[in-house]
Image (tube, rainbow, N blue to C red; front, side, top):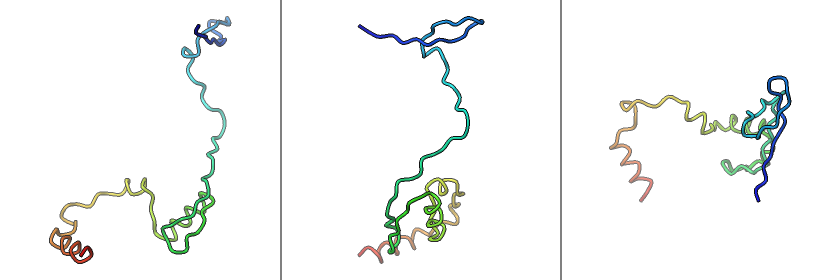
Length: 98
């Protein structure tokens, strides 16, 4: 046996029973509060500070010249003419990966 659910909605001045799928979701009223981040220990630098809030994370990222993935995506692409020469790239790979 399946259970059906109904809600009351005022249609043409009268209250009628309608299925929830027929009712659009209500728009949120008031401000939206986002939950703060869970504390974590950053391993990107040797001091490994504990990051306990978004403001501390922003300050840490700025202090160490780090960027987020979203910021990286919005950066302009480097034209092919300005990219590293393939010969230099191969030389660097050979030098640092014996």
